[in-house]
Amino acid sequence: MTANILAQAQAYKTQLDSFLERKFLDHTCLLGLNSMVQSKFQGWITNDFLNYYNSVESPVPNNQLEEFDTISLLEKLWLDFHYPIIKFFQQQHAIHYQQVHSSFKESLNLGHRSKGSSFKVKPVEMRKINDSFTKLIKDVFQFYRNILKHFATTYQNSLLPQSLLLHFKFDVSSQAKSTSDSNVQANILYLIHKCLLALGDVSRHKTFIEVSFVNPCISNKEFFRHKSMTAKEKSIALKPFFERSIQYYQFCILLLPALNEPYNHIGVIFNIIEDKYNAVLWLLRSQFTRIPDFQLGLANLNRILSKDTFTNELLQLFHDKNDAPKMKSNFNTADDLNTMLICLAGYYYLPGTYRNGPNIVKKLTYSKVEGQFFNTLLDSFEQLYQIDDDASGSFFIKQITTSTKFHNFIFRYIEYISKGLASLNLNQNSLTHSLMISRLILTWLSENNVVLRGFQARKYTVEAFIRILKVYLAQAETSDIRNYYFREDVLFRDFSVIKYQFKDFDDNHLFKSKNFNLLLGDYSSYMDGKNNLRLGAVLVSSSNIFEKYYDQDSKSFVKVDIAESQNLVDINDSQNEKRLDKDQKKEKKKEKKKGKGKKADKAPESD
Image (cartoon, rainbow, N blue to C red; front, top):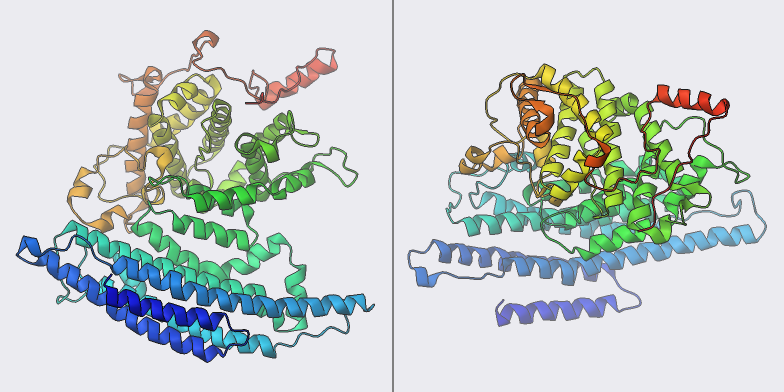
């Protein structure tokens, strides 16, 4: 950055700081300063990159710039100007909301207990603050959209997906500047990513202020509705307001899946709307890209998991009002399964919160919760599978620890998912999700030798997985190579658990084509054609992984035979070692009544 630009930027920053320090500030001052700053930065940003482009395309090599300041300018504008102004307005909204809330509490203290009968929301002041904020947000949003359009349409870039151009209705003319320099193309893509990230952030902050402060102060009715909403009601009611922000972040992930921030920001949104499970999943996903040590996402993840939200929900599932153990009559909801899953994983990942000796919390043993989780998963599998439009996302493997005991839990998870899949009457839609899940599992195994050895040592897990492979084998047909990435390939791009991508297809021709759209999934062709390709990939991978159970001559899987002495890892299930099916369990109960005892379940030992 030139000394002149730095000096001007610092002068504007000093002026902004003086405005924000005032006790009483005319909002028009902020709006005017913001417009002036944006105008300056827009010129600096576009001119700086044009100079960089011209130097790279210059026929004289010595003239080429090795560095440019466009990215730094864009980041400086957000960090030094836009973000502080947005936080200032957020504080203004929060102060007024707190005054309204204090007024409500005072009315209760005066003895008016029936929803504060003397209390009345006065929306005028909040409306004034929000009107100024809305004008600011409109200007800021339009600024980043203009910069986005500039870099998307001024320069030709084969890395830019067509879906993004169509979404924003951008047209790239034949007069757009072309370049064959891969660094220039990558830098343009990164600048577009930063603009999309800023659009998501602006939209997220605006929505947060609206739903948290503005809407509750519209009327008494809205105030009490906001206060009385349960976490579930809040999740359902507020998510649509954040869809726009999430869409911008998903475009960021589509462009550059290795960058962590969008995953974190989506997790933050789900935390705001009290959907803690999805918040955990997205924050966890922020930790599994090729860029390690994303501390912000890790801190947010640990902050959510360290609270007693999930353990309290677990207690509600298993205990009655007298705090005496009592199973709920019907565990059939995804929410119940999600709560149990988080607590079971937390037992290994965060023992300070989720481990109390052999128990997860109070008198709830790990084995009791694990047993209920797997039984419920299997009993409700068909219902859950039909409801879930994105089964691959819900069931993806979360390798949050290298603990062998946690791997054993994941193996059991895979076993019961395999049993559930094998029990389904697979149509084209359900077959698609089933194959997506199987591809993910097989890639995870093939990319982790220690995990694979542990998996292969578990007879019942291998049996269950091969059972679903036999179903696939019966439906397999010979297929050609594929012409584009599938949905799951796009979903798990740069996912470190599977070493960043699926490798069960030979996709060299896709990479050589230099058509970035082929790597973002094309869903225009018939589903059954893609499923034939998926089937082929799954069966080839599985025949390599389970080579000793696959007969090459008959092209079929044979009986699994794993002797106890052949186990390659120490298997210490929290359930009975004999993995009994339901009918066998019934027989076991009958024997117990006749006086034949049954061993108690053991919880995993402390690590």
